[in-house]
Each structure stands twice: as structure tokens, then as C-alpha cells.
Image 1 (cartoon, helix red, strand yellow):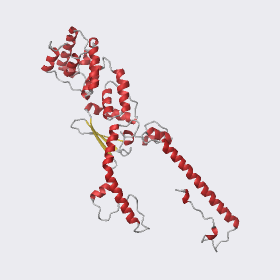
Image 2 (cartoon, helix red, strand yellow; image 1 turned 60 degrees about the vertical axis):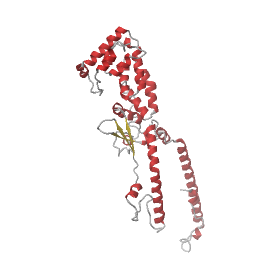
Image 3 (cartoon, helix red, strand yellow; image 1 turned 45 degrees about the vertical axis):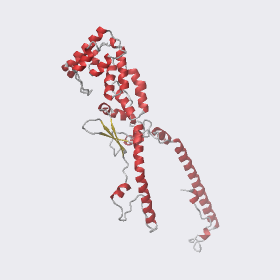
Image 4 (cartoon, one colour; image 1 turned 90 degrees about the horizontal axis):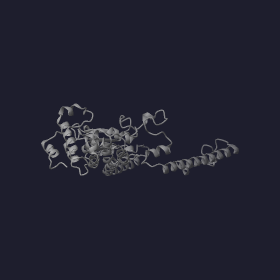
Length: 375
């Protein structure tokens, strides 16, 4: 709508329906002209106010932050139970919701190396690629897919503009939809498939099984569904996922805030085992150093029961190990008895942890007990 397109007829004498048919008094004619002029001025003012509101909103909003859009639009936040709108729960973004209802436009497929195939999560690019807790990995994958589809979109748009221009000038009385497909017998199946490109993105990723089981907690953090409450068991896989998906705020929260407070002598064995499973060698070596420096004070040796012989060898042969020779021999012997007692290992509850007990081989026994290799 443009104010320049608003025209008025200020000379009613030349109107074809007025001449020779009606006798309009001069006062009524002047009133009609004044009313028309007032309407034109009012329309200009409304247009000017609309432009100011639009430019103000456009300058304040950045599409990279969902919270900024909500604040500038003065609307309720899009998360469950967070607003006062009566139908807010119906429009909240939730990766657990039905993908059609939540208007999911991104399918995230997570493979964990099992024969079950990948696990699909129907998520939203608004949060994973552009939100305040966005994933740099997902954003890069979407960008690559957009670049690959750009040539097909340009070709399709050129074809549609050509058809629209051709058929629009055949008959001025013919009204066509701008995005409608016009078939003249020359389009094949490939052209039809390009005219309706699939808008949904698909991103596939492989992670270890431990990290794959933590994906729901990771997505809850991205969506802000629940307050992040990491534990000793969830911190290592969350750290892995934050690094794998390039979610920097989560990586800072786990690596710089939680783990330095939680990693100590009693939790170090657990961190060591989980980090080794995730191939997080930095965390694994850090946990081994903590155990080695305080190994003489470790009284609860049951914490070492789940450690593989390879990790136990790394602990015993660590250059920072501080433990007397006799006490070290007792602790290693106790560890070997716990590993050798299969009934005790199988008897403890391992179903929830999904751990696998690595058997003790003769080579492991040699490296852990031979005097030439013991400190």
C-alpha cells in the first residue's frame, strides 16, 4: 500500500454519473471534497505510523536469538508452562511432540553403532541452528544442504517466472496462482519434483552408545524444557555431545563449572571409566592423575571394580603415583580378587549402567604383578 496511489476526485462536476442527472448543492459538494481530503490525510498518517513500527521492530530483532524475537514482539516465551497465553502449551516447541503438530523441519538421526539403526529426533532449525543454544555442527550441515539445493531452486524459479509471464500475457482475464505449476505437456517427473522441493532437513551423526542414551537430556537443554542438573554419570556424555555438536555454552557449563567441582577421589574412577568409553582421553588422564596422587588414601576399593585392566595398569604405572610398595601390593591384589570373582561382579546391579566387564587376561595379570613393572 502506497500513499501515492491514493487519488481523489476533487471536481465532482465532471463525474459522468453526476452531470445532467443530479443537482448537487454547492455546500454538499464542498463537504464531500473536505471529507475526501481528510480521509487522504488520515491514510497517509496511518501508513507513516505503520512504517515506523515495522522499522523499529526490524532493527531490534535478530533472527539468531529466539528470546530477542519474543521480547521485541512482546509475546509469551515459547516453552512449556512459561507464559500466560491460554493456548501456549499448544504452540510450545518440543522435540517430543508430534512432528506435524510442532511443525518440525529437521530430522536428526543419531547412530550408536548398534544393529538397531539410527534413532530419529524431530527437532526445529529455529533452536538447533539459530537459537541462543544453537549447535554449530547442525548449522553447518544445514548451510551445506542449502548450498546444494540453491541451483535447483534458481532453475525452478526461472521456469515458474517464464510460465507466469507467458500465460499472464495470453489473456488479461486469466488469474493464476504465483506458485502454481502450469503443465503444457513438456514437464517430466524430474521437473515436477523440483517444483515442490522438500523443506525438511535431515542431519545424520554417529556417537558412542553412552552419548546416544544421553541425547534426550541434551535436547532438553537445547529447548530449555528443564533446568540442567548434571551428575557424575551424565557429565562425561554431556561434555562429549557439547563438543561433538559444538554447543559452546553447554561445554563451558560442564567442563569449566561442574566437572572441576565434582571430580575428586571418590568420583574419579567413574569419570575415568566413562571418559575411556567416550574416548575422551583428556578427562580420562585427568581422572587417573587424581587417583594416582591420592591412591594411598583410597579406602573404598570397590570403586575400582569396574575399571578395565588397561586403566588399572595406567593407574599403577602413572608417574604421579603416591603409594607405599606394600600398600600398593595389597590394593592391586584386592582389585584382582574382585575382578576374578565373577559372581560378585555379575551380582552387582549393572543393568542400569549398561557396562561391560572386561575379563582379566594372563597378560594383564603379568603387567599388574611382575616386579619388573611394578613401581
